[in-house]
Every structure is written in structure tokens, then in C-alpha cells.
Length: 128
Ligand code: HEC
Ligand code: HEC
Ligand code: HEC
Image: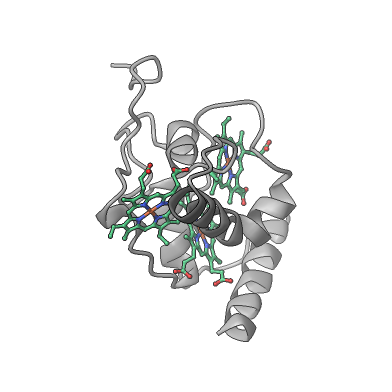
């Protein structure tokens, strides 16, 4: 599982790295849409986010649910606040930040069966 995921991830990064330099690259799978909607920077450097966001989220969940420790740095709600689309207000959907990359990497994730994928704050609502 980790082996496969690491392979997928390496491929993903390779594609991302070469995207603007090779126009002839014919894509079989649509590339993930990584559009940053909000905020100056992520909660950790991008390289670290790409590799470790799963662990960060799961640790955060364990700390909150089992130990009752609430911090906001890796809170799922915060991810959604910054990464939800301006158009749909969601991190899911066809071009959703989380889902487009997960579709590409064939990751399935059940988090949003319970957690809302929608941005809650009004200030960041879609321009009309
Ligand atoms: C304050 C806003 C903010 C929050 C909160 C936030 N992000 Fe980010 N995220 C960004 C920005 C801006 C970038 C673009 C890279 C940068 O400059 O840091 C980014 C980049 C990323 C990337 C890399 C995308 C790529 O280019 O490959 C991932 C993955 C990511 N975030 C996941 C998360 C997750 C998971 C959470 C919650 C634990 C989260 N982010 C919380 C703003 C945020
Ligand atoms: C069956 C419902 C359910 C599912 C599925 C679920 N969670 Fe949660 N999660 C909860 C509940 C309930 C809490 C506690 C809510 C609280 O106290 O804020 C929680 C809390 C959290 C927290 C700590 C609160 C925060 O936002 O910082 C994180 C992080 C988190 N979950 C991440 C995840 C991730 C990542 C997944 C998917 C891998 C996931 N959850 C799947 C129900 C769920
Ligand atoms: C740059 C691509 C990319 C983006 C953007 C991205 N992910 Fe991921 N995510 C992955 C990959 C690849 C994996 C599988 C890695 C592994 O299993 O080691 C993964 C796995 C996960 C997992 C673990 C799933 C499981 O059950 O094992 C969670 C939770 C997760 N991502 C949450 C998020 C959330 C929430 C967002 C949006 C805020 C997000 N991811 C955005 C690429 C991404």
C-alpha cells in the first residue's frame, strides 16, 4: 500500500514538475486541478504537505478525539477554509482541491461523509 502510494506520488510530482516544459505531453488521466483559492501559504511547506498531509490530519484527529486536544494548525476545517473552490465553496467535486488530486492518485477517502467539504466562512464566498 505505502509502496504503491509512494510510486503514485512520485509519478504525480514528476508530472507536476514537467508540466510547463513539455507541451507535447499527452495526458491519459486528467491532471489534478491544484488551484489555491485562499491564503498566502499552507500550514507547512508544500513539499511536506504533498507528502505528509494524510499523517498530519490523522494525527490531528487522534489528538482531538482521543486526547481532547484542540489546535487549529492541521484542522480539517481549516484545510477546507483555504482550499474550497470560490465557485462551488467545496473541496470536493470535479475540480475540487482535495478530490481532483485524489481522483488522479486513485485515493479514496471517507472523511467528508461526516465532515463538511464546504467552506463555512462568509468572507470567502464566491464572487458573483
Ligand atoms: C491559510 C490557508 C491554508 C490552510 C489552512 C491550508 N492550506 Fe494547503 N495550501 C495553501 C496555499 C496558499 C498553498 C500553496 C502553496 C504555498 O504557497 O504554501 C497550499 C498548498 C497545499 C498543498 C500542495 C498542493 C500542491 O501544489 O501540490 C496541499 C496538499 C495542501 N495545501 C493541503 C492542505 C491540507 C490537507 C490542509 C489542512 C491540514 C491545508 N492544506 C491547510 C493554503 C492553506
Ligand atoms: C464517522 C464520521 C467521521 C468520519 C468518517 C471522519 N471523521 Fe473526523 N471527526 C469526526 C468527529 C465526530 C470528530 C470530533 C468533532 C470535534 O470534536 O470537532 C472528528 C474530528 C476530526 C478532527 C479533529 C477536528 C479538527 O478538524 O481539527 C480531524 C482532523 C479529523 N476528524 C479528520 C478526519 C479525517 C482526515 C477523516 C478521513 C480520513 C475523518 N476525520 C473521517 C467524525 C468523523
Ligand atoms: C497534490 C495532491 C493531493 C492533494 C491536493 C490532496 N491530497 Fe490527500 N492524498 C494524496 C495522495 C497521493 C494520497 C495517498 C498517499 C498515501 O496513501 O500515502 C492522499 C491521501 C489522503 C488521506 C489518507 C486517505 C486514507 O484513508 O489513507 C487523507 C485523509 C487526505 N489525503 C486528505 C486530503 C484533504 C482533506 C485534502 C484537501 C484539503 C487533500 N488530501 C488534498 C494527494 C493529495
